[in-house]
Image 1 (cartoon, helix red, strand yellow):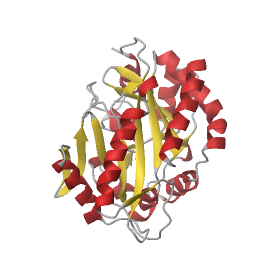
Image 2: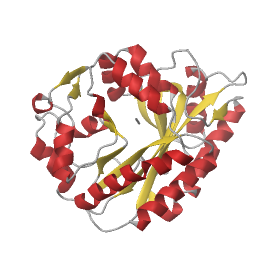
Image 3: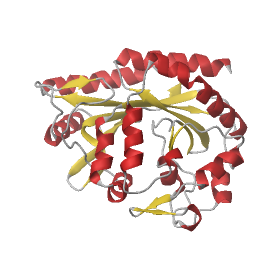
Image 4: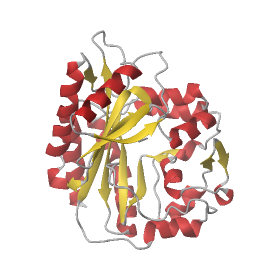
Length: 318
């Protein structure tokens, strides 16, 4: 859910926050003022559950201790929520919560696709060295099995969803851990071709990395008090960038804990895009049009890079 992938390059493009949502604005967001030189940059979001010596999800106090220790070792505090340390940064990388108090996400600095392995691995290993000091260990699996409420609300997006969904539904997502890659597209037409190609390739992705979160996501959509359309999650196959915008505009916008029809909503475009959970979706980072490849389950560290090599090989062949 949580630059590139979200690696996260802060979006300098106008979000039109405070303006009524209009399809022409959304189309402009995906098409106007883009840089189209081919860089082949990629970023990653890597979520990891952490457990204590009894294999139980760590407490909020424990995850806060991890963040504080990293700050003492050169990381910078970048976001707070009340007294809560919500995000820290170093060398363009970010560590933050992804809904669960035990789920720490690494959002990496975008790098060229041939260098996507070593820098994130060094950061993950730095995180592991700190957690071991507290008798805390990574649990690299896609779902943590517990009936305990693990949910924390570290940012505006999550607070709005909590009000809309109800705690019971949103807490389902606190149990998941995923990996996401974000790649740059050359232009809008290229982006649409990639989305459709990735949709066709998804069965091959799932052969090597099944996605058990699928069940939790669909349960979340079905049980949320919001009343989402069922196609707010899943695979989309747009015919064009205009068709992609049309499909987005069918979905209502989350505004202050309520669903508002697209054309009546005053909303930040980027925040709206984050609330439509398609497996492959478009985002804009600075002046780069990007594709988020979202449905990869978190497993062993080496599996993260094996999945990227598979995806990179497929994308390079197109």
